Amino acid sequence: MKLACVVHRYGADIAGGSEGHCRLIAERLARTHDVTVITTTAHDHVTWANHYPPGETRVGPVRVIRFPVVRPRDLHRFRDISDRVLTNRANASEAEQWFRENGPQAPALVTFLETHGRAFDRVLFWAFRYYTSYFGVPLVRDRAVLIPTAEEDPLIRIDSLTPFFALPRGYLFLTPEEEALIGDRAAPDTPRRVIGCGVDPPRPADDTRLAAAGVTGSYVLYLGRIDPNKGCDRLVGHFLQYVDRTPPANRAERATPVNLAPAKPVLVLAGPANMPIPEHPLIRRLGYVDEATRDALLANARVLLIPSPYESLSMVLLEAWNRGTPALVNARCAVLKGQVLRADGGLYYQSALEFAAALDYLLDHADVARRLGAQGQAYVDREYRWPTVIQKIESLLEEIAPRSSLTASSSET
Image (cartoon, rainbow, N blue to C red):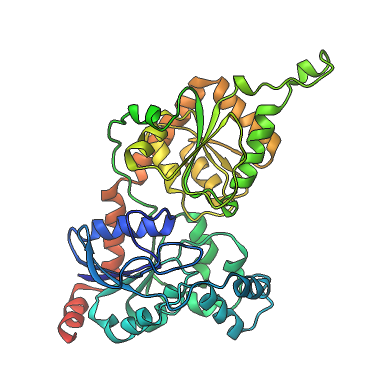
C-alpha cells in the first residue's frame, strides 16, 4: 500500500509521545509499504518555530515532506481562547480557532492533502488536538485513519469535536481507556483496534553510561519531558516531602525534626526541562539523554515514577517493564492506572502520603518489586511485541480498504 503518516513534528531527536509513536509505526510499516511522513518544519512544541528545512528528505527508511509553519504560537492569544473552549463555552467558530492557535499552522500541508491526498491508499493521522489533524482529516475522510492519542483532559469533552470524531474511516487506539473516551463518538461500525505500541526485546544495557552521566548508587527515575503538564512539579514536591520527612516513631522521641535525606534514593530526572527544578542533593538533573544512557537508566532504576495526570499511552512505562523495572504511577490518570492493573506491574498513588507509602514499600520489599517488574515484562511480551502490534494495524488497513479497492484507487491516481 501507499501510506501517508501525518504528524505535527517528526524526528529522531524529538522527545514527544505521539511523535515518537508515529516514527516507530512509520518505520515498521515502511518495511512492507511505501510510506511518506507529512509534517511541519517545527521542532519546539511550545513555539512551533521553524527548525528543519522545508521540502522532501529521507529519515531512515521513510520519505519525509516538511511544510513551513506560517507563524509561531501566540501564547497570550492561545490562553485567552483556551479559557472559553476548555470550559465548553465557545461556539463552533471559536473552537475551530482554538485548533489554529494551538497549531502548528502549516496551510501548505493542508493544501497538499487536499490536492494529493488521494494519491495515498490510506492516510494515518496522529493526535487529534493539532492543526494538522483537525484540518487534515476532513480532506481525506474516505481514507483517514485517526490515532487520536486522546487524554482525559477538558478538550476531549467539547461539543464541537463530535462531528470531527465521526469523520475517520478507521481508528487505532492506544489503550482501552482511550477507546472508551471517544469510541461512541465515531461513526457507527467504524473499524477500530487497540494497538498500544511495539517494543523490541531489550538489548544488554551499558551500565558504564550511568557513571558517565553522574548517576551512582540507588535511584528512582523520571524519564521524559520535565513539565508541569506532565505532573513533574507535583512529583518534585512529593519527593522533597518524602526525603525530608521525620518517621512517626522519632517524632515522640525528638524535639526537632530529623532530615533523613541521606538514607533515601536519588531522584534522577532525565529529559528536557520546561520548568525550574530546585537544587537538592538528592535530585539529579540530566537533561536530554542518548538512547544508550536511557537504556541503562531504565535497567538499573529501583522504580520508574510517572506523575502525569493525562496520558493516552505511556511508552516509557512499557520500556521500563521491558527491563523488568516496576512503576509507581499517578492513579488520577485512568490510562496509567489501567496499564498498571492489567500488567500487575507496579503501584499507584493519589496523594503525597500515598506516594511516600508506596515508594517506601517498593524500596523496602525488593522481592515484591522484582516480581512486579517481571509481571510487567510478561505483559509486554504478550501484548506489545512488534509482530502483534503490526498485525493489528495491517488487519485494520485491510478491513477498511479491501485489496480490490486499493488497486482501483492506486490506478486512478
